[in-house]
Length: 132
Image (cartoon, rainbow, N blue to C red):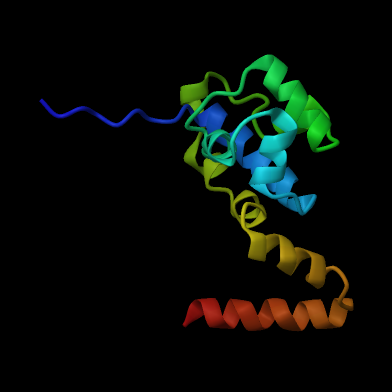
């Protein structure tokens, strides 16, 4: 009998995404966060993927290391009902997904520095390219 791969709890996945996003906004490596927590960077990867659940005391350590509140780590989970009732549009929100990538954060930092006219032109260009 083949073993079934353990699925991530959706809330743990969202919390992990928030840890990753906040860490990357601080330009902090997984290794540096791991050092602050006393764990390996592999453990940080597991937290960020939602594969390992983050305990309460560890959540506080992460918030301190990332200079945020513990509430920031739960962003996007309020009012969702049980962990298994989270709609896929929440888990696959394009803004959330963009914020999970190094390029997405870099793009956001650069984009907000541009004039509104230039931002509009870029959005139009990207929309046109996406339609191809």
